[in-house]
Structure formats: structure tokens, C-alpha cells
Amino acid sequence: MIIFTHPACLAHDPGPQHPECIARLEVVLEGLRATHGDLDWREAPLAKLGDLHRVHDASLIHDVLEGDFAGYRMLDADTVMCPASRAAALRGAGAAVAAVDAVMLAIPGKGESTTAFCAVRPPGHHATADRAMGFCLFNNVAVAAAHAIDRHALERVAIVDFDVHHGNGTQDIFYGEKRVAYFSSHQSGIYPNTGTPDQRGVGNVFNVLLPPGSGGFNFRNVWADTLLPALDDFRPQLVLVSAGFDAHMRDPLADLMLDTDDFTWLTGELRSLARRHAAGRLVSTLEGGYDLDALRECSVAHVAALR
Image 1: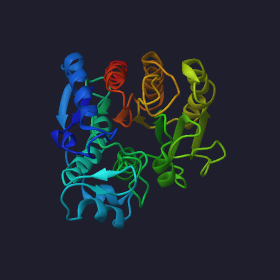
Image 2 (image 1 turned 180 degrees about the horizontal axis):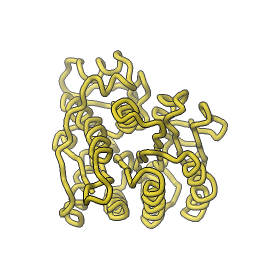
Image 3 (image 1 turned 45 degrees about the horizontal axis):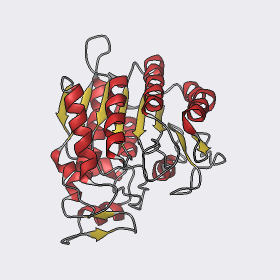
Image 4 (image 1 turned 90 degrees about the horizontal axis):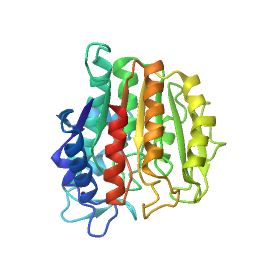
């Protein structure tokens, strides 16, 4: 297994008291190095402009990369960047692209890694084609999916999103793209208030809303009964994961009340599904998670289940 990260992702500073703080990635890296230090650790490259243009409008790319400012710059009420955020955003998207290349070029059965985890920030799944929002600048998992279609000629790429918040940006970008299927469970009644079951795209979008306090039993049932069978039917050639751990019971921004074992269970199911359909090829990238202890614990368990 490969872990992609870069020190630039630690320099993105959205300001004091912001939930998407530098310490989030610090604790993830500390936990992973302590328990999975023997894995193949690689430096995330910079995303190329062509990678970004596949999913983002030129206006958004310009806003993030070309603005000349000092201090903090607010892109919306929740999304803040500093000058160092540009490099972090490029490394985050670049990690996802490099991870896709690594697993797609791996030869199964030859000891080469077919799974990868991108330990990067800022997160990405709220960023739409033309708007940075929800702490997200570029949509890392969307950049990865578009790269897989364009450079590796894939016809069926699955994006699985178990972040407690709906990945509205990912859904928006691929809403009319039948080669990419999006599968998401998320809490009802919270930001960004999208992702209802009737939003189906071209038959490639699968959303399940979970009420606050659902807990692991309901979460597992939804995936086992609805989302995983639909994912199986899609027969993905590559599985991409938006790995947000803010559905954990200790997270301050939501109330879905999962525990670490629930994430471990779903990760194992996705790993098995990737083996059935995609020669084991799976790339996961970090999204949300705002209780530091829970985030560290869940990230370590997620990677353990992917090994």
C-alpha cells in the first residue's frame, strides 16, 4: 500500500479557531507513521493545470492560484485560504492523480500496491466546477476520477463518499457523466443540504440520507442493503473513496454517532468489492473529521483495513 502526502499540506492555514486546522493532518500523519511506517510513503506531486481543467472552470482555478494577497482571504463564509494554501491545494489534487497512476500501473500478484491513501488537506468534495466551498478549494477525488477516465481509458469509475456531509461538488461535477458513479451516505439536515435520494443524475448517483443519531446499525444496513449492491452492479474498474471521518460520535460538527469499527467494516467491504471488480485497485483521499483523537484513530483503522 502507498501513502501520498506532502509538507505543503501542513502549511494551509484557514485561520485561528477554524475546524479545518493544521493539527488535523498532523495527528493523521503521527498515527500513520507510528502504526504503518513500513508502508510505501511517497511525496505528493503538484497537480498540473490540465488535471484541474478537466473538472474545474478557469475562473475557479484563477481565483485559487493567481490571487495576490497577504494574510487570509475568504472565498466564502467557511472557506478561507492563505498564500500557502495554493501549494497545499495543488499537492492535494496531485496526490490523487499520482495515486490513480500508481494503482492503475501496478501489476496484481507481483507484489505491487493496488491501494493508496492520500493524507492531504484541504479536503475537496464540496468544491464544485466553479466554486470553492465547504473548506474545499479543488475537488481532489473528482480530479482523480477525471484523470482515470482520460489517461487510463476507464469506463466505470466509482466514487464512494462516507463523509457525514454530502459531497455536493463531486455529485455536481459528474451529474451527467455515466462513466462515473457516485455513492454517498450522509446526515440529513446539515451542510450543504443536498444529496436527496431523488437526485439520480443519469442513473449514476446514489444518495442515502441518515437522520441524526442513526448509529452504526443503521449506517451498516444502508450500505449493506442499498449502496453496496448498487456499487456491485456498477462493476467499477477503479474505486475512489472520499474518506471523511466526521460521522464519528465524537465529532463536533455532526451527530451521526458512528464508531471506528463502522468505518473499518465499510472499508473492508470496499476492499473486497475492489478485488472482485477492479483487480483490487482503490484510492482513498482524506476529507472531513474534526475531533483530533477520533480522526487519528479512524485514519489508522482505515489504512489498516486497506493494507
